[in-house]
Amino acid sequence: MSSTGLQGRGVIVTGAGSGIGRAAALKFAAEGAKVLVADLNPDSAEETVKAVKDAGGVAQAVVGDLSDQQVVDQVVATAMEAFGGVDILVNNAGIMDRMSALADTDDAEWQRVIHINLTAPFLLTRAVLPHMLTAGRGSIVFTASEAGLRGSAAGAAYTASKHGIVGLVKNLAVMYRKKGIRANAIAPGPTATSIQVDASPDAHGPAVIGQLIGSNIGRMGTAEEQAAAIVYLASDAAAFVNGAVLPVDDGWAAV
Image 1 (cartoon, rainbow, N blue to C red):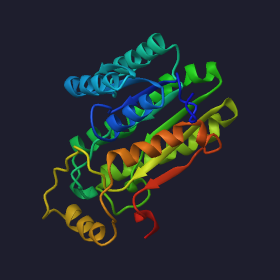
Image 2 (cartoon, one colour; image 1 turned 120 degrees about the horizontal axis):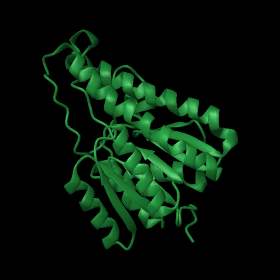
Image 3 (cartoon, rainbow, N blue to C red; image 1 turned 120 degrees about the vertical axis):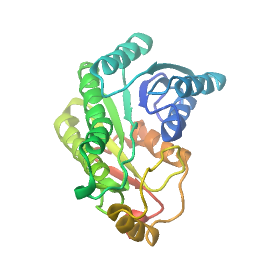
Image 4 (spheres, helix red, strand yellow; image 1 turned 135 degrees about the vertical axis):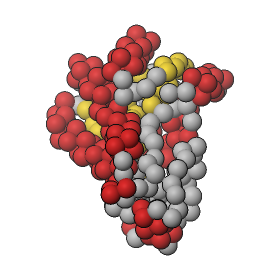
């Protein structure tokens, strides 16, 4: 039996086709959890499922855009049918903005980032909560960001989306702590993943942010280091941790 209390638990991990999400899926499976891999990319999702199964774990995939309510419903229904419940939800999927300052942020950039980074986690959390409430327990972990703690880590859209995630975490913790449900988040610093930033270095936003980030960040983190923090927050080892936003950033938040 796993000391983390994750043995046999049903877990949904979004953005699990690569990066932090894949590392988290593998780590949950290694602890004995059953993992629903949710991702937009079918090939990447199946690669994660194969990696979990090759290591002796249990996983299956649901592919689609999590800002689509039908996809959200499919993810939850699949997890309920396959695992008999959803004990843990990891809202990890997200995209970067173009580091645009607010005056340079067009409607398309704003809507895309907010939709994927904030609306999709809201929809999936709302869909999972009734099942957790019925079970009388649950743990929800979000991937926030240093941009959820400060204004100098990204553009206007991404910063707003991650501050929104921090607000959701705190509100969930207060609203549902007497129902046996915990909500927490990690706030990653720079991490080696496949997420790309399509920013023009001579634009106002990237020029300002580049100067501020360069002198403050520590080393580059790994997806596995972020995943370890996610699994900790989801596990029984963090049973008294609720409403926390944990920087995983080599001390950047302390600067």
